[in-house]
Length: 239
Image (tube, rainbow, N blue to C red; front, side, top):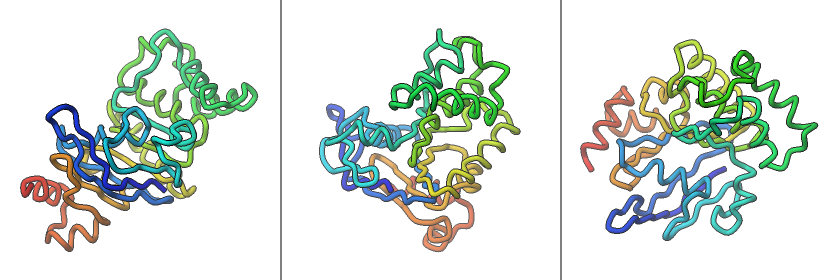
């Protein structure tokens, strides 16, 4: 379970987050939505320990991300918006290196890497350097890298970025399988069709604040709308 409790973050005169609170539960996919500049990426960066909050707390299974960032990272698989692959390493090496960073032995890493290459359709590019990859290929390798240590929690920022229709469908099915295994998944996306298809809970952030949260059904009842896109536009426009 991921808990964010009254987290605030300021960059100079800009308040990126203002007392943000929400819970992402195990075995569910939580959609983190908001317009550009709303504070979503700042929130995710705090969760995966790149940034520290100015106030408030964030925990991964009760582990404070500031007090014990290494333990928190071991619980997390992270797909950032910018895939951040090492350009001179090939796909297999990029994935294996992150397994090593997570403390896995080579005996553990090799079968996991091969299984992920097959699962994500990456066998044909396994030995190509990352600098030659398309956007979709970079995204899939970054996703494999995030999953190599079999984390219990996933933070996914625009995971279908650059993927074609078939790859997107495959990704969505895999995320449903990971959810069914009891993993806690936070998904940030601008694609409302994707959020509608996948998310059990929704958190909408605007101007650094949580402006709506609940299940899709609860939000539909509260705002009198059946479309998540309409709910999103209405809540953001009211802030």
